[in-house]
Image (cartoon, rainbow over all chains, first blue to last red; front, side):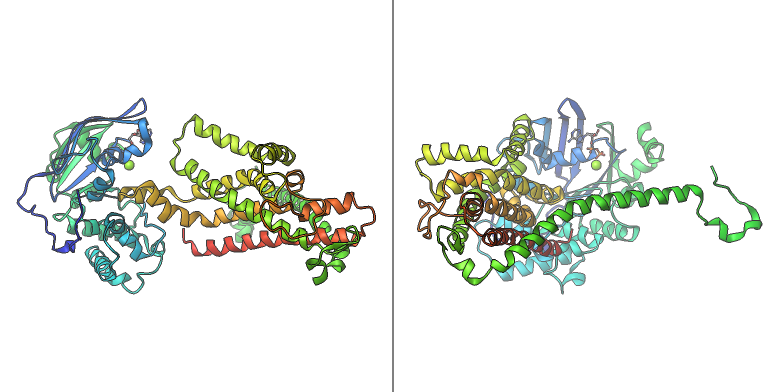
Length: 274
Length: 304
Ligand SMILES: Nc1ncnc2c1ncn2[C@@H]1O[C@H](COP(=O)(O)OP(=O)(O)O)[C@@H](O)[C@H]1O
Ligand SMILES: [Mg+2]
């Protein structure tokens, strides 16, 4: 896919309001780390523009499943083997002719510990943009606009607009995590994967992040792993519950929490496992 | 146990926090170990201080503008060390040009690209072992490989390459370690945005590893400047009262010159030897100090 000049994505409202097309379609995915099978025939469909929470006890394969969607598990080489099918926007992403760089541009990731790069705030926001810009010339005005739009979108602009040249690692954790979301936006991702994005934050920062994530969905499809039941309940439309590498139950959040179909789900939600 | 609980109003508040015999014992032990470790440090530091002191006292008077910038004279029993000083700089510069690019590139490969398998582990082990090879062995290798086989003759080039081979493991190990000190989270952040390995290395990993790499390089410089064996048969001359004009010339060198006037020139005054030694050690110390200063300067700019 050849890239064109990036229009300010704030004007890019995906046509997904009434669209029920799938952003992520995971079918029958199994995954092995060496001889250890971490995922067993997992299915999961995520609608475009929705927020889906992925819950389950520690070690059940949530992060593994998330990394399957941007093929980050492959960093471990032949040691990891994946079978099944994963489609992102109807494209088969496990196919050999998928360019990983393009996939990861469209499928961004936010981590448990905020990990801004040891660069200035501005350079952090522009990092992905610069990587994917390739043939275009440097354009200061364009870059300034990108930085401002991205930071406004994550509600960080007013706090940092006077210190864009400062090291991003000097920000508070909440600001860092917002920055980590902001830096994905300039390349117009479709999907944002979040792996326990608030677990390093205090309750107040957590609430701020949740609000932001809620505000972002619609424009972006969000698949978020969380340990926090209240968070899953508050800040997601659908919830998927995993146990020991299997997808146990997936449905509308309300229903999962009020009337889980599976005993395992009920036990977990009521705190009967860790 | 002498620890007693809630001993009522009798002994009062003050005794509640008083030291028990067990606390006393712990304090004595703690003091003992502190003294022990301090003593060991002293044992380490004192000889260095004495050496430097003696050199300073006995060699200090020899140091002068004249001494540094003039040629040896009277069969090397008088005069200065200028050609040796210049020669050492040639050797250091040429060996750096050879060892730094190769060493840094190899370290980047080993740290950032190589899969973690038996071959990589074997190579890493070999590099560590290479660092332990005695310098005289490197010297013999240099004679075989560069002087004879490659046909460079005894020249600055052959000597520098020998020194480069000797310091290569230092550069590789220092570089690899400073690369690995860059948190994995930075790399993951980059890869997850679609950056290639090289983009990640260039924009994030290298800039944050540079202080450690430079430290390794400077340490290798001081090692290069101080070695005699590897250059003795490959390019350093006993007496060569000219400044070298190309890498194919022979040259004098500080370490070699010191060795020569201390063992092979009968009437050389002690002052000359101590002066040469003092100059060499000062050079090395200055470089180490520069590396320490530079590293702490760069560290101060890092925020993680
Ligand atoms: N690199 C790896 N090598 C081997 N096993 C792994 C690796 N990463 C994760 N696992 C295993 O896969 C399972 C799922 O891990 P993970 O996806 O991190 O779980 P979660 O995110 O739900 O806590 C765990 O049993 C874990 O030990
Ligand atoms: Mg996890």
